[in-house]
Length: 264
Image (cartoon, rainbow, N blue to C red; front, side, top):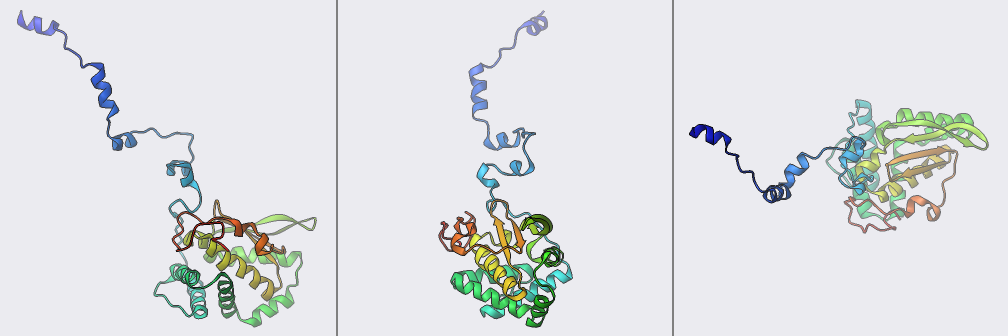
């Protein structure tokens, strides 16, 4: 009789208010771990906890390069020529050595001096005889512009990262004279727009024009860190170039103000 009575006795339930209170004070760690991801979000959006985290320069570097022996040879050779020009040495190796030299140059010299030092480095790296022969044998024409574009994608991946040739309208005709750099290795490694414009864009444009007789306009996209090299196109003056009107990345580690004049 007692057992039957106990089985029929209803078990009192917890007040709803107390249960709600427990849910309200649920551990924030548990809340994050149990949150259901949005199936419509892209891979990049899932990585970013805030929209601004998706901007270039605010996300963690994920590109991993497995440089070949040829790539390492070229990187260290250019880094040594750069160090020769600046008179500054570092003990790092491979691409890290190149970017360290760039940082040291950026901190010590003015933008104009930076342009000159990179030009000296490139002139040391490439013998004048070669540049003179190229200028004579490859005058500017459709073939030469397309040749320069193809050559860049084949032999300079170690410097700028994966790239491809793209077509553009040049004087009313279609030409494959554009190199599209998917994500610039130098910009990604340095995380500084000022180093991109003053240690890469300006001196590279000047060197290719003066040494090989080929105008080239480098157009970086600082949102996704891509860049286009348009062979045959004259670059705008620095005062009119949109690249020099961009604020630097928030994660730029250099000791300069993040303002519209960061790259100037």
